[in-house]
Length: 273
Image (tube, rainbow, N blue to C red; front, side):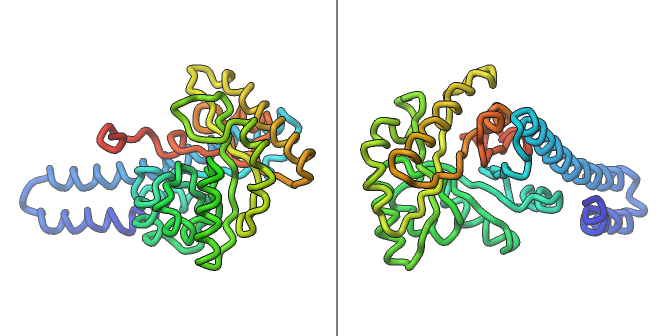
């Protein structure tokens, strides 16, 4: 990673050295400082990824699981393609986006061999744009949305892989199936011919302590087990756990964790707005 920074950014610094040879040292120091900052930024993302992977491995070992059974989805929401490239150079290949419009701009700027998952609320008017971009949608949160995805997938000749989002805490501010509603509609969901339903997803309530999420992860795992038994279906995946609680999620059976801030850092106020 450092060599790439040296090859591109420090070369620009060298140019500044030449053009400012008689103009004093301040521009030179500024250019070199900019290069150093970029090198630090790239190293920071690599170190963050390594730290997250270590925490996943530790949590998996604690639960008697293999770390290889858990996939890390690096969430790139609001982060530019340049930041994503730094994660790619550190070895990350699976990324997640929560806004279709942002993904339509960002994904074509990056290598075509990456894998992309959609993790946000999917509006019906964005389905046709989303389906070709993402190998998996984590957030099918209603039967009506599932029907619409199925209809458009048939028109486009696609077979989307999806997870069903469950509102595990019954929060009015969040999307997702209530557990009882999902049980009532599961047969109809499984009958949609174009959808491959592969698991469940949840977002627990925000809490100051990661341990507070554990009961919701347990609930989702138990719901998955009950649905598999009742409907004789295989639902191998549980998408649960984010920056604040992904280690707890791994301990309770997550097969995918969705981590952004712990890798790329906090978003700016401008980005958040």
